[in-house]
Image (cartoon, rainbow, N blue to C red; front, side, top):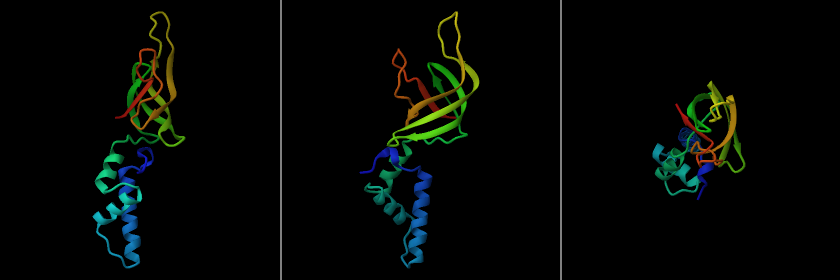
Length: 144
C-alpha cells in the first residue's frame, strides 16, 4: 500500500488518468475515464479510485503565495506562505509565513516580542509536531 504522505493532490491524480487515457488511445486501447482513474489507483497501490481519492482528499495542500490563517505560539494570525519545502520522506513540510500584522509571541504583561515572519515544520494536517509548554502545537495553519 502507498504512503499517504506521498500521494499527489486530487487534481494531479485526475490529470495523470487523463494523460494515461490519451496515451493508451494513441496505441489503439480505448478506456473510459472511470477505467483510467481505476488504473491510476492501482498504480498507487490501492484497490480502487474511491480509496485513492479519500487518501488524497484528507491532506491539506498548500502552495507558496496561498493565504492562510491559524495560530503561532497561541496567537492568532492571517498570513501569506512565502516558502514551502517538503522534508525527508514527505510527511512534514517546512513553511515560512509572512504575517499580515506582527504577532506578539510573549504572554508576559511587561514585555513584548513581535514576529512578522516565522518558519516552522508542519505535517499534512497543518499542525506542528513541536508543542508549547501547555501542550498545544506551536504552529497551526489552515487555508483561508
